[in-house]
Image (cartoon, rainbow, N blue to C red):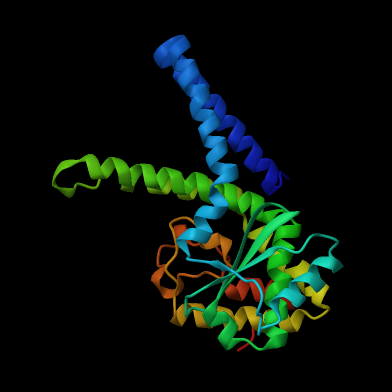
Length: 270
């Protein structure tokens, strides 16, 4: 079975080749040159802009100096256990309780925590969240998740731009291109990634029950207090950040919490 990172490289190479072929068909040598330049632009956008875009959209501020939650020590401890550099830590001002991670390399990743999460979780629960998110970086899930998010968001953004050019506020391109963006995410991001990461984090914590209870609690908090996020980024978060607002099953990025907990613990807490 092809893993997520292989899917990403296949998709990037296919996209670049498609740009070259289409460019040549439309404009021969000049079109080929334009296709090549667009391929370079696509790769630059994916690898150098995607991560900072998500952090900027969420108004994340890097944690430095004073750390009343002990996040820095927790991140350094768990990173050392996994034999990797400690990721950068960011805090967002949102009251919703959630966490996310971004990064194209396990040697240079970033963790994000909402202010609501830090207020609602105790020290042991917060340690479980840190372990869970660092495991995503160590497994390179963040590479696949981040690239798919950037590509999908670019397509959705193109649809918004084209619709703005139409008269009378017509919506033609967005309904057409939005499913394409989500198909990219569905192609790359499989439920298996979430299940495997849950298991890896629980083994690191040596306690499946603790992680399961944290996932269950965070899911409930996210349902009642959803988070406003950039398009095509919900799969970057520990639990579905859109809660009850997300009614379209096709657009759901996470496995159902019942399935995740059954896979992790063998039962769903009632």
